[in-house]
Image 1 (spheres, rainbow, N blue to C red):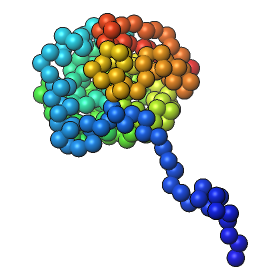
Image 2 (image 1 turned 180 degrees about the horizontal axis):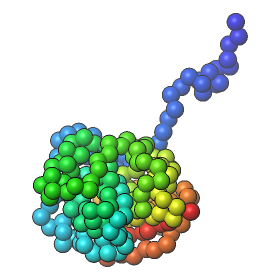
Image 3 (image 1 turned 90 degrees about the horizontal axis):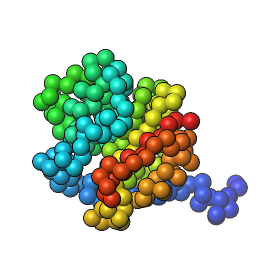
Image 4 (image 1 turned 30 degrees about the vertical axis):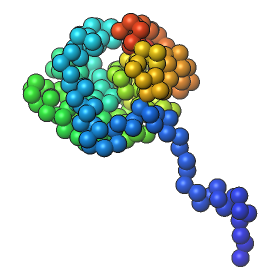
Length: 219
């Protein structure tokens, strides 16, 4: 009977180790109670004045008939705005990895009688988006939660039509209450996304010194 050398046997039988890149950002999402606290902030009464969703829709250039992905939809805050922007001939794919968030997002869609929203349960490695289906994938305040950005970006790229776009709206590290919560600042995000099959086509402030918009096109 032949035996593998110890180093090789460890490599063969050990479980693969993946980096938890966003451990700080995701610490509050590990329990239902933690996600309830997050949900309260996502439903905060002042969010519209800070997030400026209608202005965001305009900057992203969403048109009637588009298919748009709300990646990490959370409680579905953006769904009424996205649904209205794409119109009855368009579609919104609302994705999240947590059942309790998806339940609240579905309740929000029902409250607003949204008929063009489809819900998708993803994972931290795979948003499970249908291939070649979307004109735009929007990651609003969610990119800094990606533990496996290369895996996520590969699926996002496959989900987009040729020339489709990825819009990342996220926080500057220096402008966030806890800079360690934000995995990469804007320049690092741009480098990472461009290294994974995209090219930057536009960037601007959304909330000056607090939040930015970076729009990429699939290569």
